[in-house]
Length: 77
View 1: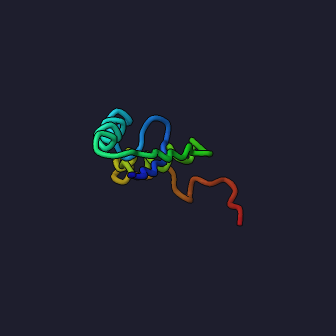
View 2: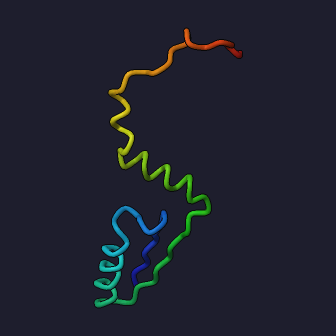
């Protein structure tokens, strides 16, 4: 028996769900597969983590800052 542990974020994991299903189907051809999928309790946190790791915001590193400390009216400590 093969155990597959998967943490899903929506319908995406590390690879698209269709590809995951294909891998599971191929594994089931040779032996019994027990799938343990863990739904994300905080989907927003999971989606943010996926976006961060996926590099979706990498373009912001080259953007200039829009505001500086001189733009503050009140500075809180």
